[in-house]
Length: 341
Image 1: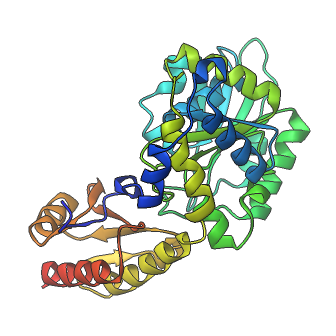
Image 2 (image 1 turned 180 degrees about the vertical axis):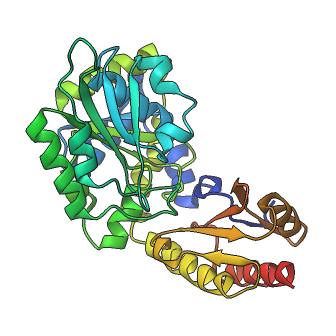
């Protein structure tokens, strides 16, 4: 697979040599008893970085999101959420299965739901309508093309939620991509959410894991729910060690992924048969609209050594990451040019 240009996702990244050394030498203990020192250090570092009281290491971003929904709600509650976010589209209906909540989906424009649309849908609950307990945001927004939710927008949603006594959860799977794109610390974005999940296994290049952050009381209950879901791990400091390296070494370099995505998007956008909404190319994703069926284009590109995903019938997703360099981008552009002929 190493000779291929793999643009399917930033989840295909492999750990760095420094991560592998840290994993091999990790000090470990039983995390179910809270005795894994490496996990404890990672959780403390993550909480500090995001300005939260506590954090919890979980196996996946999906589990992190679903734990948050479970902790913030009770069965029969309503969650306001945009219709194209990851929780709705790609988590297998887990919110209904695990938390027995109703997802009230709202249309968005490039990942943004107007604040007034949330405002008119918030309901305290009565004999006919479930109470709104939670608003979920996603930053960066995957299905919108990796766009960044602006800090001011998040502040406005947070202010609205606070006014109505509604919690806010941030699916920040690629939170550090958003922070780097905005040129601000991630804690500034995290400040406008009661709970935040971010992935270690995407752009930060760790092999496994995500982090859920929030108040001490929230994380205490989240730990219990993680156990219920089978996500409690034992000597997982071997995995957490890579996360500590990532938080120290992999955040600033995300800007390189953004620049390469931009270069790729600008080239493909000028080719016949393809169209790119350049306003959405803000981080490490490029969504390419195709005249031909996207599945056919993906198959043609694979024969030319470029892997990508057909996420919709006429849409291809390309994702840059630390294992994609400038030469890979050149090869991908050349492959698209051949397909466009």
